[in-house]
Image 1: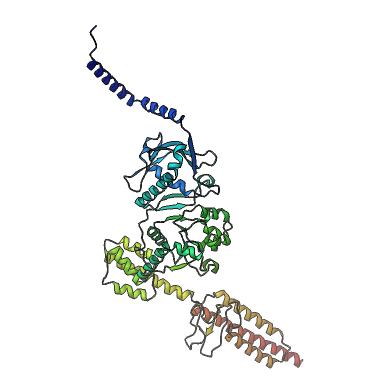
Image 2: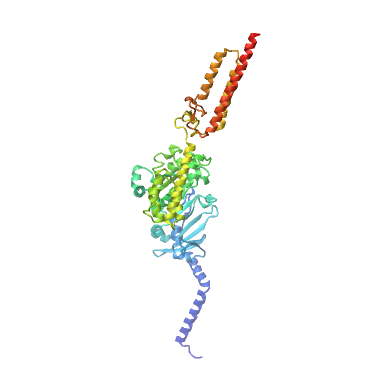
Length: 557
């Protein structure tokens, strides 16, 4: 045989090694070889394990777990895990990688390898992150590594600036926690709110001062929180302003639905699971309190607002909305529970101009004086109603303004009609009906709520009284007749006074007739009543004449 050429042998070995490596790289054999080698290497080292549970023993969310989990999902090695969840981001083309349960992730820091396991507990279904680190590296890198993770989380959050909306509608809260969240993408800001510009600036200044007041609150011995009450009719922009406040503060929103809360204790647990730097919102609190629910008591709401549990966290803003605060218990509104009251009224001309500018791009228009004149008559609509009219007619600003004018005129007419029908007697708190004289024009009725049946009852009372009078014929006839005439005059002309029951009374004013100053009945009904009274008087007179004739015959016999 010929002696082997070293150059040829080397070339054959190189080509063979390349082919073998290329074959192994296309199969799972190389991956498994690496995995087995790491397992073999791990058997020669001693490791320390640290658990980071998602919830503590009080089912309160562990903020460290949330921060570490966010950091791990940002690592490139999350793509190398066996299972990775894909979620869409805030933008249509964004894709977020999220580590799945029971998966391992490798990270390196200062030359040391660090392992993370995402375990899902079988008992309560909560996730737990497990840190695996070599004992020889523990003292050197553990604390610096955790600080590195937290700093990376702050950087990620500052880049994202994502506000989340949390809701207490989670099934089986003992397993899944009490809050579920979604990205909060509401476009509203404080500047876009329909509100006086000076009031907007005051609210901004108050919020900015709160953000810088941690040391001040600590020096006073008070919890670092601030409470706001937004009150006004529906459609005035309270919820939109809440969204603007959250965007201004970059705080997550925790929207508390009291109807989903089991009892006072459950409400406290909800508060314990809210994060710092958050906004806690309860909408339509006045309606819930008026309903007198049996699940969450007034005491539970008061303790939620400023009880001992409210100190379990800091840098929180609480916002409550109401349609009106007149019927709310004063203990709910006292300082300390509510720090700032902000009223959201119906739209006036100034707010209308802001809406016209933002919705239609109009700063001035020839129809503005007509709109202002209608507003001065007392007509009003909510900003939501006017804004919807402008949106529907945004292609033609003139048509939009005319539609607003029509809506305001309709509102003004309905207010006038309602005022005429529903106005009560200003001189009496009991709503009594008074009949007064006007002259020879007969009866004129205005502003009352009594019905024809009440006047019929009055007529029945007069009839029964007249029957009782006709029975006692053995009295002196002249005195009796004079007494009856006086009694009838007083009954026709008497007035309802000294009574809190709201009964109808006729007040005598003279011979020229009667004038009903506060009634909604027609003059025809009063004329009928007056005719019935006169007919009754004639019948009684005939009965009296007949009785006198009978008495005279009896005396002659």
